Amino acid sequence: MTQGISRRTLLGAALSGGLITPFLAGCGALVPASSGPRSISVHTQLSGAVAGAQVFSDVVADYQRRSGRTVALLKNGSDLPIVFETSTLAGKAADVAVVNMMGRTLSWTGAGATIPVTDLLDEWDLRDKILPQAIKEWTDDEGRLRAFPFTRTNWPVSFNTGLLEEAGVEIPTTSDELIAVADALRSKGIGPVTVGGSDWSGQKMFLQIIQGFITEDEARTVFSTGKLSESAGALAGVEHFVELRDAGVFVDNVQGYTSDSELTQFNTRKAAIVPAMSSALALVPAERAKEVTVGGWPKPSSGGVLAHPSVIKSYNGHGIWISENGREKLDLIKPFVQNLYTERVTDEFILGSGRDMNRVTDTVSKDFPLVAQGSRLTDDDVTPVMLPDLLIPDSVFEPMVKVTAMAYGSASAERIVDSFEKAYDAA
Image (tube, rainbow, N blue to C red):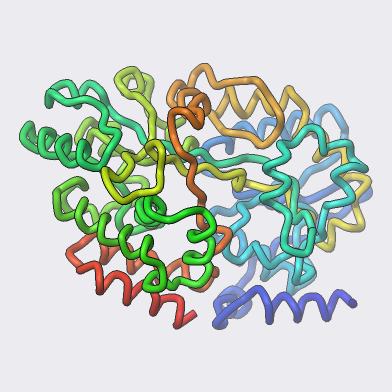
């Protein structure tokens, strides 16, 4: 397949609804392909205020000093996938992309925008350094390893025990206990559960609550098809969500909150409970962390399928992808990637940013106590549930966020189910 055909395949298979048009029409900043015999370009989502961004920049700078090779570090946030695709169509994609595996990126390898790294895993002596579960999760249905799994996701629930004590209650482990705790907190003027009801964080909470009533196999079917109405367990999960919402478990006006505002509310003691991924917990100040205990989302008091409170766990975080342009520079990319999987670099990420990593390691965060607590939770403490991102079609993500924002408002269970399924039908 020629490069030109590959780009057209990407346009047809990975992009949808003309979303890339604005970038092509007025784009003056396509990512330039690296040049020079000892140079590679790396397009990274580890940038800005994202946990690990500064560590990544420092690691790259150190690599350049020690190797004498040039790494052009190019940065984007959530728009990286679209910018990378635009650059691919123009033949100017960076050699390496460091980005999450979800939505648009799921089709990159099959569409020819990036190369499978299955054989490189052994050729570069990385297989024994990466968690086997991560390799499995990053491998597609065709047996292709899409990218090298780098960071991972642990999504526990944090409880401010100081606020709970003020309300005279303890950490809830069941939904009935959670409702009682919410009542007690409200009586003291304290917000119960805060979450980004208007963005992806609230979406994750909604889907996690549904998983309290369906098995993993059922969850895979429900989240890939959107057919809530065909699963008795999923319907029970939606009804349970509405029950918790109407019982006042979530803070007032939660449908207007974002992932940033939920953390601000928790850090300022205006809410006692927050479900947040470990990279966000790394941002909780030390003073607040001293009065916080990390656990799981309370399991349903009846009718559920969970043995313990639940925690979203996934090996899906940032991966190291190699573009078609990078195929010509594997000899230069190899030492760069190998350096990222050294024990020294892994320790720098864990100790310096609180990131959970896919490299095999015994290192635990010291300056990020909540991240450390989350990493120590075992299956005797919590029941892991899936991160649905690998199953939800990319075109459904934004419509689903609108549905879940509505769900955090006052919509009935029937309306939520109908709107959820319509979001899939319209994709």
